[in-house]
Length: 79
Image (tube, rainbow, N blue to C red; front, side):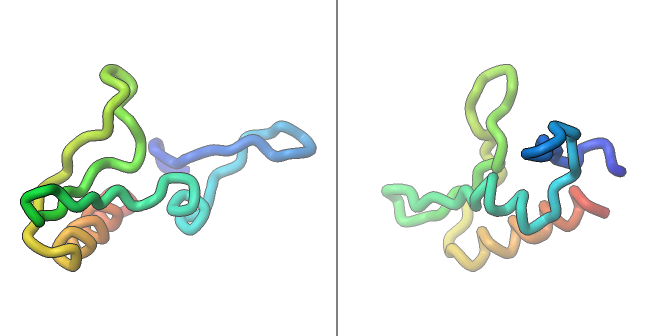
C-alpha cells in the first residue's frame, strides 16, 4: 500500500481498510470554487493539519482547466 492511502475503519471489525479512488472522491469532494473575478480556484481535498485550511492548488480562467489540473494532481499522487 502506498504511504498516502486513505484508510477507513470497517463498520463491523474496526480494522482499517484502504479506500478506493472512487470512495476518496466521495469523501473528499472536488474543491473547485468560482471566485468573484470569474476565475476558478482549485483547493486541496483535505485540510492542512497545521492551519486547518485547504491548500490553494492554482487559479484558472475556466472550470475545464481547473478540472484538467485536478486530474493531473490526482495522477501524480497515485503514480
